[in-house]
Image (cartoon, rainbow, N blue to C red; front, side):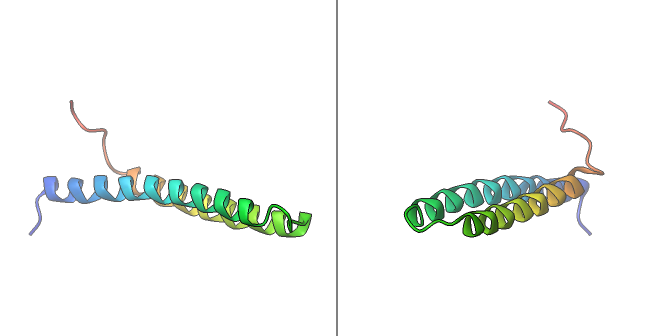
Length: 75
């Protein structure tokens, strides 16, 4: 059986990974926009924006779920 400390360590690691996902999405969006800069149409830009909006919302939802029942760490 896991201890609460082990469970908390897993939750904290997941939270850090969520932040990493958001940073990765932002970097990939910038790379994609730069690659398509000369061929970008409003429709393509809207689709790119929607992909990253949905993925950011998913990451936010995951982060909220992870934090929902976890008290802040004691300093």
